[in-house]
Image (cartoon, rainbow, N blue to C red; front, top):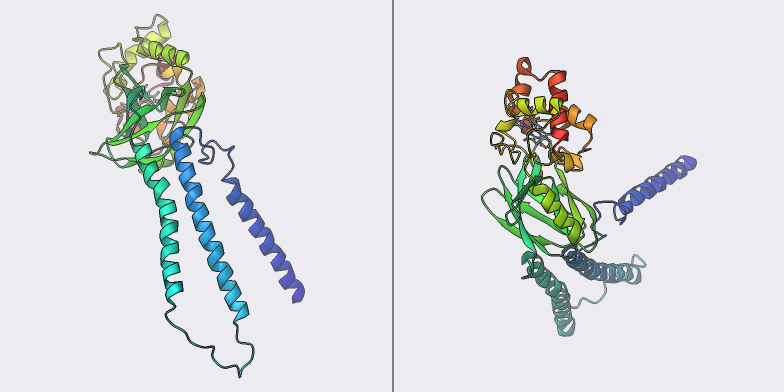
Length: 351
Ligand SMILES: [Cu+2]
């Protein structure tokens, strides 16, 4: 019996250790979505507030539990015939002390919090430009009105420059979150929200929708690509190039399908082609220049593009492309393998 108890106690310790390690590993700065690795002024201000609140909370926790444990041991009833301790009520000094102390703690928490709220909500006056970010089930659209660019699932910004971001949604509530650069802010249909981003180092930052928005919510991700100023300028110039009808015969066949029978044009825009002006799906101008497909769920390779066109629903259950596109909704009108090859060749030419 005793052995059994000892055995199960060991198991409980083991379980607790595993749980603790799992829990604490979430705080690792290494993980791509760690909020503890703040790499911009906005996330840095939010992390500071977190530490202040955590510090104040830890202080109160330790104090209260120390007093509680002390009182429990020191004043416990030592024998059955011990009389009740003297009952006292209303010590003015104590009453005043524990009214003032929490007020001071709240002020310590409130000052950086209120300052942070205003800091995060208002883009600095010297913000480089504004991006209009729109949430869709289940992808992100980024429009650069000043540059005349629209892209999807990849937000490009220059390093060490504040960029104002306005948030919208076309369907349900989404939440825009780039853990290393800025905390979550909702994208609400019919209500514009404002925030700003700035990154201290060039690199690729992970983003994610952080508000449950339907079946494929977990697959609604994006990347923020932070460039040096020169690289960013080059990216803008490249993105502004209009597409031209491909010369390669297979890609040309794909182009004909895209703007014709396959009806891709009904939902997708490709700048340069009059016919392709749809706005239900991501803008596909320069789709081949992007790192990921399907809102950050897979690398943008030839095989993955083909697999996506063969059956988008197997990657993102319920997505609008497989739900509403005639070719997928009605298999009798589905794409044949040669047609898919042609479309892949065409899309891969859009770099
Ligand atoms: Cu979402």
